[in-house]
Length: 271
Image 1: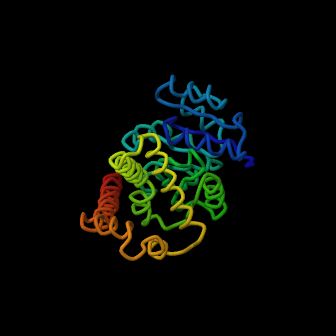
Image 2 (image 1 turned 30 degrees about the horizontal axis):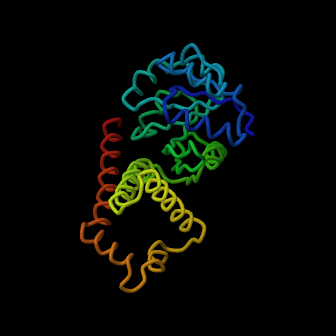
Image 3 (image 1 turned 90 degrees about the vertical axis):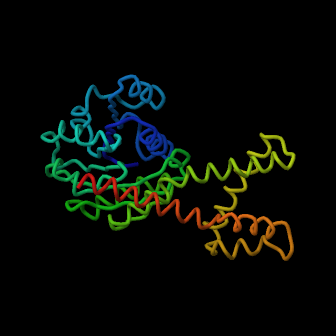
């Protein structure tokens, strides 16, 4: 359990996912968490669910918290940062989870506060997240370590140079949506083949979960694991041939590339 008090400016889906994960893992007590949001109703809803504190405004979060998560939408960042510009203190460790907003844009607003930028993803809600972490110019190794410990408790976390966070955004940040599409398509295929929808969906999701665990827990290359399933002239290799004919791998590559390019565009607009 960490000693610091956590504050969240923004109480959206990602803030909820992180708070749920941190509390479920015993990293922080709900009473040591404080949230604010442009929607007072949303903040109260989160407080009622998780038993965390609600701040009347963003400045109250800064007054009561040591580690402050900037969890607002990127387009809202300039207004929020301008409002708080004179309220930051050297004791504050700021964790930005805003996609595409570089540390070079954020730090001029933060005074002597230290900044760590993180690109998480929503599966942290079920302690299966994936995050990239980069320290700002004033962040110490200890600051980065604390943030890495928090995010490692709700999934996998990697400390990287900031120039790689666009790639993280495009891969682990966006790819849950692609995986949901894949699960939906697998389930549709099962229904087409005669399975009831609930059975097909559960089989599809469990298969994706199991395959991912095989990659993570065996450490083997996915291609090697694929080859074990694909026996000569069998059903799997026939399915692989159909996927390759449709450009499956090329489309996935282009999706990640497009996401990284869009993340870089958003970041460039903030510089």
